[in-house]
Amino acid sequence: MHHDLLATLDLISSKMRLKYNEPQPEDYDILERALDNFDYLWKIANLSYTPKIHSILVHATEQMRRCEGIGDMLEDDVEHIHQMAARIESRTSRMTNKALQPFLHSKIEAIQNSQVMKQQIQSSKDNAKRVFKKRNPEANSFIRNKKLKAERDQMRVEILEKIETKTHLQLDPIKFKYK
Image (cartoon, rainbow, N blue to C red; front, side):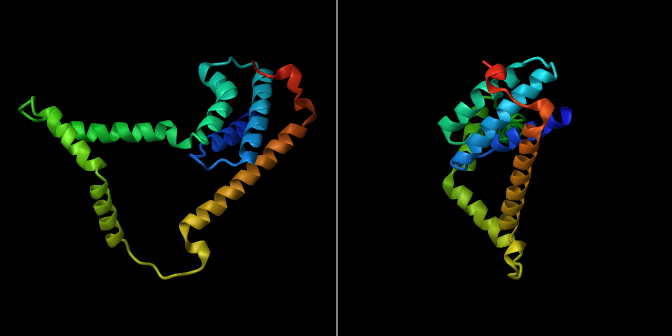
């Protein structure tokens, strides 16, 4: 049962990480099936409903539909922003003139967020990259990663279907729907 619970949670987290405009209608259907299954398994395991579990079971699909994908709003991006701010803070914190600290902080932040500066940085990175010979399409990491993700998603759906067909885990949606 715990294996099934974790496999279902893996599928849920995979669907929840879809970014803006990435989810397709079948992704929402699979997510709802997985959430119903997860709720049922959670009850069978006699686990308590924490605020995070409640928010996933009750609000996740609604938020995902409303925002057309919420993967780009997860804590990874927030953590990245915190790290950028910490780097700026470490540069400005040693200044002896404390009145100039906020000014310099905002100036560094403005430079980092400048579109012109971002283009220059990207151009510099592109010029520094090695140029590889053109090989088969599988050599392109973007195409390869997309293909691998599709395979993982298919495997997750197959696992969900196996879990749903287990006799001791048959889901009665009326009896076990979380409110």
